[in-house]
Image (cartoon, one colour):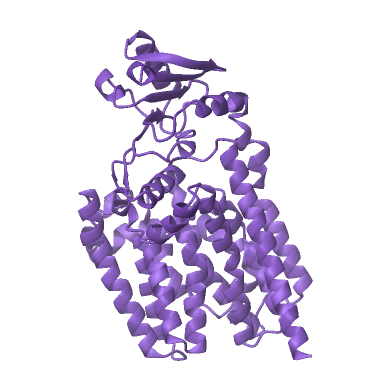
Length: 469
């Protein structure tokens, strides 16, 4: 009987994860096909492609080495896949599988803490229905999606007393993004404060997290970018460097309190908690310590993008929320006891907060130039340098030199590129019709470029020297 049950477990988990991953992969691929991918996907696809080709991963339109952005070392092993077949769909696959596979450690954490099989299945489905899992998958690609199952895996490793599993999980987490060192530090503090767990795990997490935070922000990122860690400018009121910000957080608490008790913070916390409110408002608040560092930097940021369920910034918080729910379920402290009602709540929350509706609205904005964009892209030679919009760039990043039409360029700068692809109707994020129109006029007047293609306000120019080869 036990073997049959085990087969049942694997069948349920395999089916749930496979279906979820397939849906996520198809959705992100369709979005990409509709020319709705943008800046972030272009950065990672370009950098990873260059690594796979044995070239320096200097992302020209970002103006820095791929490690100078967030010290995401995980891009190097990802590049092995590009050696097999260099396509951006690897990133969609990795993202979909990573987000969906978070259900696996949630299942085992539920079982290890003593929950019944039916309860564990409910929590798995609640996780897969959590709106941020679906929404973040639609927002280009970000390596921190890989950290979600790794964070849960690290917690499970502590529960099972698997030290080397724990260390491996920490390495994966830290390799995804420099800021995730704060999550590892938070994990260490949680383990240290909670008397139930072994102190060696806490010590390892604290050492790993603090050392990587210092190394990434003070050595690696400045070395590869020549400047401070990315997004420091979002905390300008706290200082102009990581060290200044850390110092002012301690010695100028009044700067922090104004943000913590703001209405936007309340709205953000509400968004995070509503999908699983039936399991959060209980005495089991200890795991919030692990989420607190990322939660705090999201709250303190001047960028509203860090306080929603659309962007990737809240992902490291999700594992801790579900750990709280698992602990509450184990102690029978859930607000909703009936598993059917929990699934109804989770489904309604997904319907209300999931961004699937974008496929019938936002993602169709470029449909009127879709065919023209495809035709123009097909005329561009492989590996030739290209200047184009942020919407079209993710389809043209497998080349060493890529530029974006986000500002007006002089003739000398334009001459760096072999092809220039413009879309006057949809000039892309960071640009405008005015900029695109000015660039079109300049190209029409120059003798260095000729018009190769024009359809539905999509224009493709090529360098005349290129056409005479």
